[in-house]
Structures are given as C-alpha cells and as structure tokens.
Length: 257
Image 1: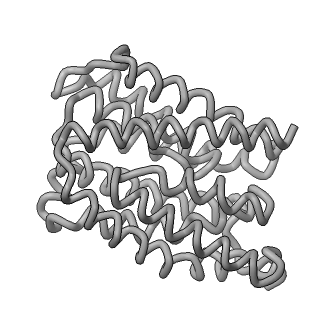
Image 2: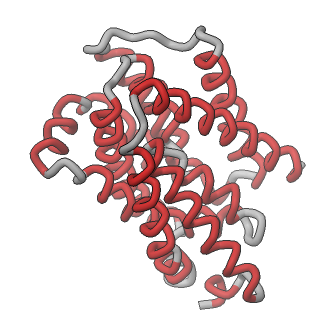
C-alpha cells in the first residue's frame, strides 16, 4: 500500500481531490479533458506514472455516466457508427501502453502537448480540419490509431476524438454521448492495458478509487452547466479548453527537462 501514501501530507490529498472535482467539472461541460486535467494536476504532488494510475478509475466511472445519459440504445447506436475509430484506437492503445514504464517522464507531456495546442489553435483561427459528416473509413481509422497512441502512453485520448467530431460539425448532445462511449470503451481497455503494464496494481488502485467520488461530483456540476450552452458556445468552450490543456502539458514537460 506504499504508493497510496506517496502524495504526502493532508494538503497533498486536498489538492488531489480538488483536481478531481475540477477535472470532472471540465468533462461535464465539454465532454473531454478529464485525463489531461488530472494528469497535469496530480503530477504536481506525485510522479507521472502514479498520476496515470490515479486517473484510470475516475475516467472509467465518469465516461460510463456520460455515455449512458440518453440511454443504452443511443449509446449502442454510437458504437455502431464509430466502430472503425474504436477498433483502430483500441488495438493501438493496448500496444502503446506497454511502453509507459520505459518512457522518460517528460516524454508523455512533450509528445502530446504540442499536438493538442496546434490543433486547438488552428481551429480557433478558422483553419482546422473539415470532414464530411459521414467521414471516411481510412481517415477515421487514422484518427482512431492516433487517439489510441495518446491513450496508451498517457491516458489522454481526447484530442484526436474531439478533432474528428468537431471537424464533422457533430451536434452538441450527440458529441457528448459519442465522446462518452468512445472514451468509456477506451477506459475499459486502459484498465486492462495498465494492469498488464504494471501501472495499475495493488499499491496504486486505492489512490484511483479514492479519486472517483470527487470526480463524480465534478461531472454532475459540469453537466448542469453544459445543458445551458448553445451549439456555438459549446464549440468555442471546447476549443479553448483543448488549447489550455495542450499548453499546460507543454509547460509540465519543459519543467521536467
């Protein structure tokens, strides 16, 4: 149980719980960025690999809630529609997760951060990706593979998913549901992958479990706010959250060099 107490004194736990509430709040508003907020915030009081373990179960719990808000039938329809993305992402995620114990701590942040930042900034400037609402099998598989690579290395697979959905002009309620389905299935695979990699083990599971309740409180508040946004506001907030998340990951990576 040693890793459970690696956070240190009470202030460390207070910060960890506050980060989990904030991460859930952001996720409830825009549908993603919870792992990004969690790994960036938790890494201020613990090593990156322990932060990665901590985010796994809160991410699974909140994604299940998000995916099933409109019922099981709507969630299953989303699975069918985005099956190519899901299959490609799942396969790559399981393979990529095995590399985590061998990566230098800064690598996760400096690999993901610049790509997130570039996508969000280009879209805010009106130069982002534009895809047909029906997408294309090859492009969807590529985006899924990229999402799986991000997810396996860091627990963060949102940016390529959001890029695909935003580029398709997906309606707000459907985008939230689809993200929940995709991230939820990804979170199940992430649990399995990191049991295999050794990141999620008996010493780190208690930390991950402890962060589930504050994350659920946060996402409930976020859903309440998001339900009051129109489509244009939702899209803008989504892109700004993505941009800030990317910049913060770059900052964390640079501090570790």
